[in-house]
Image 1 (tube, one colour):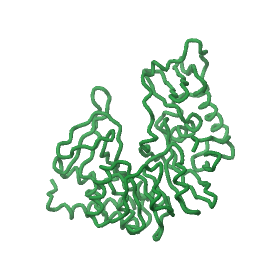
Image 2: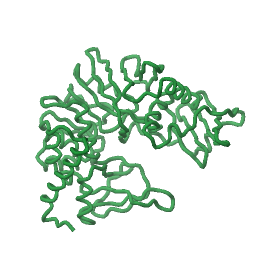
Image 3: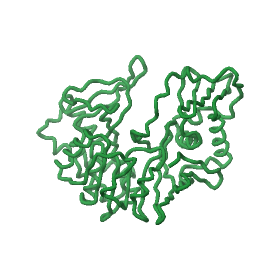
Image 4: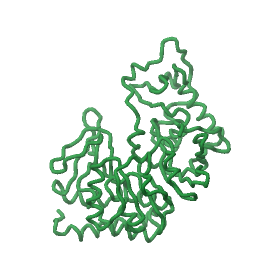
Length: 399
């Protein structure tokens, strides 16, 4: 077992090994970011975290095992320098890391993002020395520390909605000699006291681009954020803000997901049985299987985002063999039931949820199944529209 007395030496060795491995895999190409990874002591920012057990419990829930230096020093240090996301909080409740308990299931609400993604986000945002930067979602403070190491602390502002999370991150940052501007604030509204910014980078996801962020970016400034929704479709976009306050940008590739901003998290929808479509609703054969948007594939990941752009208030859940789409805003619902190799769909309410999804899938197929990089996002007073030369505009939520 690694002894605490050797901690800093072992941590340095593990940091260098992690950076080397990421560079060899092509995930780390900028020498300056590599030096930052080799310098910032991630273990200082994650005194405790959860890792999933190999087996689920008897109810099918993920078993989350707490990991701390006191419980298993070697496992804790090795995980801290792995290219993995480390879950640090569930349901907004801060754990007691002196007596952590095993968890069964639950919704993660804070984490230390995997180092390769942190560096990728900063690089994709095209941050450079001398720029003023707003980071939304301080979390553990590790990504903030990397930015401070690479760019210097003076121009970095980082905000976090959870005051306890920010306090813990501040202790770690200041303890390592980093002094960015920190504040408890909701990322939906940015942070006016330090505006305007050359770069805004969000480590959480939003259902639509918050108007405050456009207003707080300088003309020519860039905003990198992840768009998400209640179907758990995600897309990253890099926007450039114009003189008139509008913004345009192209979707970025990859299958990156972030926890939603807490005010954009999906609402509880109750018992799916209460959303059953009425008996008068006529069944028809669906043109597409729901697996097209639910499968664990890159294409389904992309299609979930496109589909939820058409039905932004819909949620999807499966009970037995039946797939339910539920819209708590309009009261609409749809059910898809497997029937001898096809799916029977029944819809009720003012919005024909699955019909809207089918239209998107039809247009996507007719366009040749284009990847995310072929779509652009336009944000202006009239709304937020996702555009593709061969697919009709998809309107995101009202801004």
